[in-house]
Length: 373
Image (cartoon, rainbow, N blue to C red; front, side, top):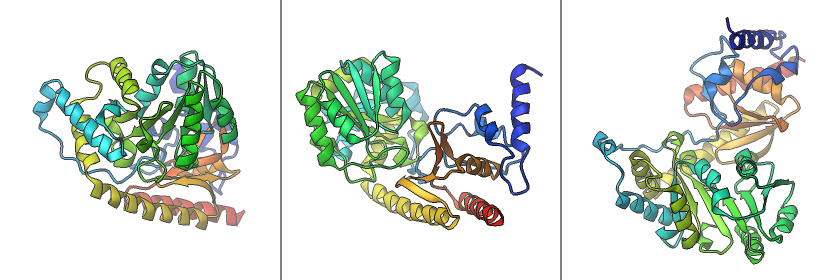
């Protein structure tokens, strides 16, 4: 047995030492689990919970469980490089879907994460300010490219930073993981401040498809960049498709940096179908609202407090967050916990009857444990 295998056995042994009420004998085991930095990676987590019921239920990502019913193109589409006309057709459809005036302002990429990583090369700035706590990928992208990044605690700090020359400000709207949402007028005022100082405001609208405060329609704007994610809303994160929306000149520079064929044939086909289907999007939004209401009702019934939410997830705040995370794992359910927010768990929407049953039974068991205490 090698060193890694030995450590995994030790970790699993510690996690199996549970009291009769189902809680950990010690929360010290939290520090030894090599958890992924983002949602997903279910197998990496569940290897430490031997005997948990399968199939595992992944509620850690905030991805919609209502996947778009794609009709995939024939396989011969993979026998050639994508045509430029196919990408341009997707840009036109995306421009219409996001309320952008022209396809010239739409840049396609292999998921919004790839476009976040592109920003430090695209925007010439000396410092970054990110409104937090939020998705960690933004801060990492700037710091990994040698740009100092401040994590702001409130909007006032962002507004102050926006007035400093050579600054990019980043706001996720709605925010991940607490669902905080700012109105479009406030965001445009910050973008105006950035433009006046020669900087930029990046608004990440990864969870914005079901919201009402998108600023994409305000483009072209001299100090505004908008990011949109495809996979979350359409339940197809494996397609890897995202969009950067900006004034035509900046969008052209972004396309030049990405180079030819930034998106594969399957992603081009998926985007063209799904983004044009506005009726499906309306139905999915209604499904998400109903499922979200059921989720929050189940959490409240179990005595848990929801401190934030978006259509596709809810953030639970509890002093027993790690014990609750373990409890869910032992029931075959993976939720998202945060090292920097130890009281919080983000919980996504279950995808089917089995997942709902598993979650609601786990919550009933959690409530019974604490009543017994």
